[in-house]
Amino acid sequence: MITINLLPRELALQEKKQRQKVLIILAAALLVLLFLGNWVQKLAYVKTLEADVRKVEGELKSLETQVRKVEEIERNKTLVNQQIDIINTLLLSRLDFPKLMEVLTYSDIIPPRTWLIQLAARYLGDAQIELEMDVQALDNYAVADLLTNLGNSLLFEKITLDQITSSKLESINVRNFSIKCNHKPKRGGKSA
Image 1: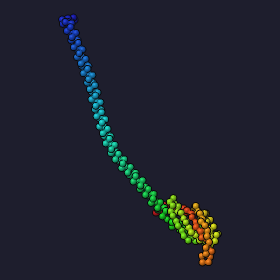
Image 2: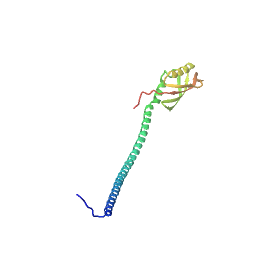
Image 3: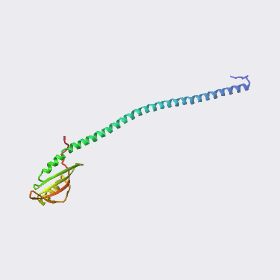
Image 4: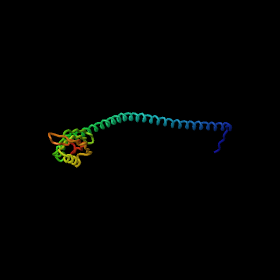
């Protein structure tokens, strides 16, 4: 079939240009709509992230208060453990001085010809008691026996002898001397 166009050519060109303009406007509008849609999507994503950040910050604040409570509990636990250790040390050492007095009554420590005149004891910690003993003995052999007995005992260490002097006690010559030493009490476990 044959088509005859009676319209002037300029009018056809004008119509073609108009269609091109409409297509360009539609393409530009479509492009603007795509950019606008992408922007709206990104804006919604940012709003979601901001909401998540606020939620996480709220959780962080509640966790910080819980962390402070836990730290306070840990400090209290440390204090209680220190107090328990002190109590256990006191329980362990409560019989140190009575046991020391018992040990000093043994004849394998203080020989028969020797007797204590004065005893000063001071607790050093570390399960040691510092002793200063003023002693009288009938002869030098008794002094030597006492020093030997203390040296052989595992309960005494750092034994030092001060100057020996002689005196009369009811017409008997006696030797006066002082001994300094450390006593390590024997502990048989925890006391109740």
